[in-house]
Image: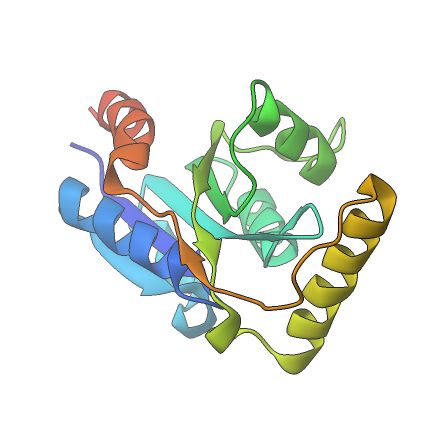
Length: 171
């Protein structure tokens, strides 16, 4: 089996939890991308990167794209987490939003429903969420409660397609 690494960037804990579940199930190495030395990538054949989506963008993806360019012989798989319930073709939309034609691309992208953790959000992010709630309620004509409540929708079962994919690629 090829040597696999799971890298993650996590602000509110969901991407880290998914990364830990994946690394545990694949029995492979795990690291926070912030603490990881890029030179160590040479030891791995397949790299999985996971992070949350923020305003449609996968956090930390710029760095990962540069690494993908620097290590073109590696297989890269991306997963991203968010609070938007997965809709048909949502992964395709995320892919198109984050990767332009002609740009280095991962072998596959997966989306995992995670949740919202207001306690770990910055003040700016909490205010932004409150503003977006206000705009949404104004547009719909239905008043929304101003209370911000955290919700955890993460589920280990969501990783099954990624695990199946990686196991096939890592043979």
